[in-house]
Image (cartoon, rainbow, N blue to C red):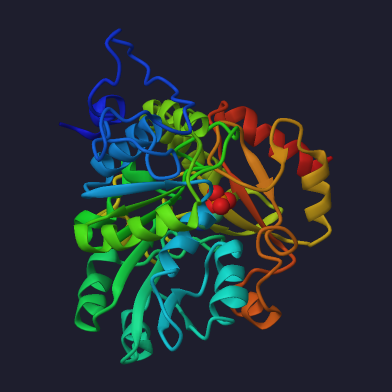
Length: 378
Ligand SMILES: *Cc1c(COP(=O)(O)O)cnc(C)c1O
């Protein structure tokens, strides 16, 4: 079955006898037992809920994994994953990464005496030399946020395997519609379902999907104990979002390509980071491992005075954090999404006073371009 069909039909068996096409929203916190020691497969909704299970089955099918767990946010998913580590362990992370993930690593993992090495994960030699005897997880985000650096999943997988570490890929930006990291050799895929999977800026969620049952079971124990589970209603919203993921991603990518081209020719813009541009340093890697380029663009304005002007003058595009919805959003990483990153790392990465980030939505591309143009001129 092709991915477009899977998006519609992966929720698994129908749960009720009415033949309902839409998965019912099961608001039950608990479930009645027939006999002592015999449940109907559901005991308590922190552990399993039929609506959430439909979402988890869908995600496992889409990513090609054996099992998924759905969490109340992307960060809840990431936090649960790192509960598998113990004091003295070490991880490697992409140096350019979602600001909240960076904050979690710096403020929570380090307190638990877990060391983090930030590495340019587009550089295989840099990863190899960062590996230690106690490296347990290599965590990559590709394309990265906000610099759009692409890491080669299939080439990193053997490095992780050789060092006995699990390779985890944050696939939020591309979604399984464009890239399936487990097929490329990753062990775990992480999603902020708040973004493209939900797709409408109306709910939050996170998903972990596993290639092997062993690691999935280990997470399952933590999942049921730590309680970061996704509600039935939000599970349903994300399931509903996933049905249109393909057409949204196609339209978003077309729009993003057009806007990136326009930004390149715009006199107020000095630099454009978009993985679909031929001059992107990892363009060939992107083309080889993903079937689309997605909707995230970052760019530098010629003069930092342009930043407030653009943010305050856009009329169609919203000045807001987050990404991945049908509405286009623009943000200023330095003071918003990446405020938690230390200054020297920001400078090194190029997250500077002139850098802006655009999450392209499904509006008409020409209207979005006109909106940016009037905001810059205005
Ligand atoms: C938003 C985001 C997260 C965190 O997810 P939440 O749902 O906001 O907790 C993680 N990674 C990436 C790439 C994100 O964009």
